[in-house]
Length: 254
Ligand code: ZN
Ligand code: FE
Image 1 (cartoon, rainbow, N blue to C red):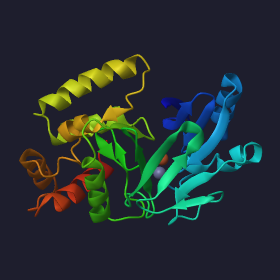
Image 2 (image 1 turned 180 degrees about the vertical axis):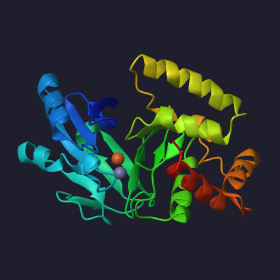
Image 3 (image 1 turned 135 degrees about the vertical axis):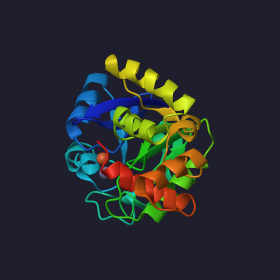
Image 4 (image 1 turned 90 degrees about the vertical axis):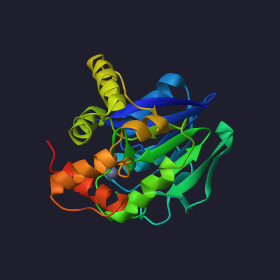
């Protein structure tokens, strides 16, 4: 199974899984780039997978279904028009045309029913985990998001992470404010600056890289906790509280 990126809007990625002429798409917020790809590549749409209900992820479903009546996998806990295969944690999204199957992981926080898909060494996590960042808490609590990120962080370290936005450079500016002395983070900042200067994507990336550089996954690291306490001016008891303080800090960071 090959994985390709389609760009949408300012900074969204629609992930396209392909085997032979069969493709599945993850989070088609816009149908136009998908339809263009199918036509140009003489490819056949086999399935749509959705992580959550936001328009920049699900907005292209109706336009795709109008031409390609395929199964639409998505979170059972969110009311999204077009879903024909509602999924709960532990369910599998089977993609027979692609000879593949992805396991569903509940990751509430950004939205209440947000799911991620994991399989064949790849993680499609929507707006939950970003390179050096995490999604905003629109519906869920910091405690929920902390638990969700913990589930993702426990996957194999060589997992390739396919998030839904190119937010890496802005996230790294924040990460450096939190942890200026992190050598791995400084090296990543330099590498990402080079990639972006050439207009290249910084996604996918590995979980190992996140564990070394993403402040939100590093809430248990003393230097990160100290920085969070200094910023909010209060004692923080444990990584879940550190995470909540970091998320607040990030909301106001420019
Ligand atoms: Zn979203
Ligand atoms: Fe989004």
